[in-house]
Image (cartoon, rainbow over all chains, first blue to last red; front, side, top):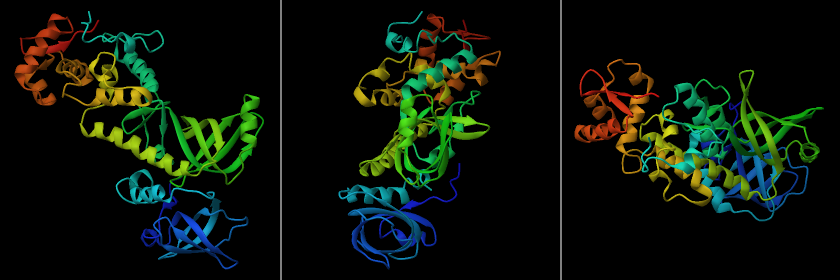
Amino acid sequence: MDTSNPAVFVNGELLHMHVGRRVRAVIQVIQSDNVGVTGKSTDGLQVVVKGILPSFALTNFVEVIGISDGDRSIRAEMWNNFGNTFDTDNYNQLCKLANGEFKHLFI
Amino acid sequence: MFSSSQFDANNAFSGGGFMPSQQSQPADYQSSSSARSRDLQGLVPVTVKMISEASHSGDDKSNFMINGLEVNNVTLVGLVFEKEERASDVNFILDDGTGRMQCKRWASEVFDTKEMEAIKDGMYVRLVGHLKSFQGKKQLIAFSVRPLKNFDEVTCHYIECIAFHLRNSDSQVQGVSTQPQMVDSSLNTSARTGSNGYQAASLNHLASQFGVDGLKDCDQLILDYLQQPSSSERERGVHISELSQALKIPEKKITDSIASLENEGLVYSTIDEFHYKFARG
């Protein structure tokens, strides 16, 4: 069992709190090209994702796991398609809880 | 021996034929209470982080405590990695974002093998399994590993983990130890009222942990206190004023309860009318 390298739930706002650490965020894809993916975080902010680019076609909502590169930027390590419908409000609330009162259950 | 207000036949006989009685020795009571608490807890949503902080309960190394409750069957959502198929089992790592954990699925039936064949590295799954300790390491023995189809289930799972934590951390704040309370539920009828449906088990357990205000009466608190090893080992028993201080109940009320408990033969006075011990069978 290894809990030394967790990936914290983040929205756009929370990204800067975890610079240099592993994070995971669900984004709604706005634009995807060979440079990177631009998307909207669950709190409605624009986020740029670079690093390892997805090897498959992305659905409307994707989860990206990677390293927080600072404000609104993630260096991707892994992509997961989350489908074309997703409740971003719920996810956004979860991000807040997982970084606030219930942080100890996650990291 | 039990008065009608204290005895709950449904609960007492729910444990598969063994009726946990108050007179049983501590060792019996441990095993009967763990059997019941397994029934009560059901399936618990957890994160790997919560499991990593789980402690062993009592002498029985196969049981774990999370939030002060015994937990056996758990459910997690996460990504599968390093899947390795062998003749008798399938091993893999589950990464739920809070940590990584070794899991095993025995390939005993065709159904198990078939279900595991569909699971690939990097896939999001819902896992249901049994928490075990093997060679000093925590391990999950999976009963069910299914690919996620709707990813709102990811969000939902973590919210459920938080809800489980919230429900049970409230009762911990009350500052009452868990061990004696396991026994209470068989005696405590009032705790059963008002619980129904899906949450019946957890509510019931929770209610039995919430002290004084009507949910658990004074008699039971006294019995719990007198049954604790620190009390039962003392030859003189426990003084009423100590009970009053420890349980934060007025002495008058303690005296009244003791009188009725003594009438029922559950406690007896020792060196004087202020010292009492629990009457073992």
